[in-house]
Image 1 (cartoon, helix red, strand yellow):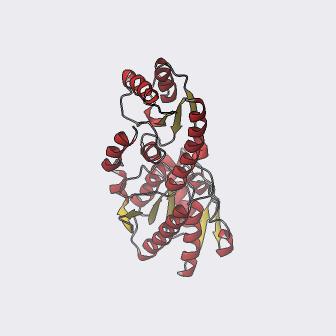
Image 2: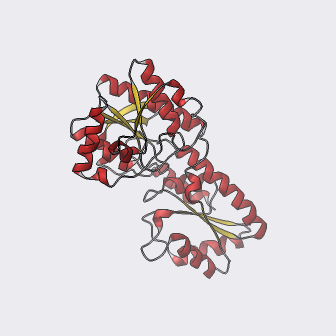
Image 3: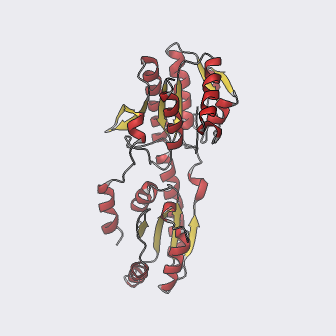
Length: 317
């Protein structure tokens, strides 16, 4: 099943689970609409043809949804009754933080589960990369390159807001790779005088544009980060333009990397499930696919690379 926010490469993972599972002699079922579909008994048997041609598609053929009912003990009991009614022996959950927390609830009640990290935010600990991140970054970079063209033509400052919830991975990496003049991350104090000084200085040095990449999680309760930065840039004497990329970052055909990662994760999830190594999440560490204890994963918060953080400031000038 897939659950929560969709991510490019989920279909590659579904395809791998189905075909690798069938090759191992397992009977494979798909659950539509995540935990909501599990509770509502939206389950179907899958064969090799069920996943034909889906590796190149974004989104998820199993669909996704969020379920408030599953958060309750009653909802979880109902979901387990449905699974047992189909004589399902184990579950592979493809999704982000909330999806993995749901998987942990089933694990705690004795049902075998294996998690697969899939979130464009890359905010899941114990894995260097989640399904969908690479494609989302390339989508952001494509937009940044196009914005930079028009910004240079008019000598303008642009603010590009990207997704990532409270984790600034997309903003940090896209900002470095896209040559942004400023990167604003969650948890950082946006100093008015600093922004005004940096924008003025860049144009005085002959820069034809000033690009700020801001993480959505940097917003304050009082103001969105794009609005706040726009006010500060305006005080520098320049008229800012804003681009909020939004859900375009989740869509599109997955990159080669995400197709391969989804495939590797899917096959590893099947191996772990069939060998009885459950209550784990498959992960990539130093290029190798490993299994991480799901309770450990969810007890920590993902951290940004200190090396990447050190690169961001000097490269922006």
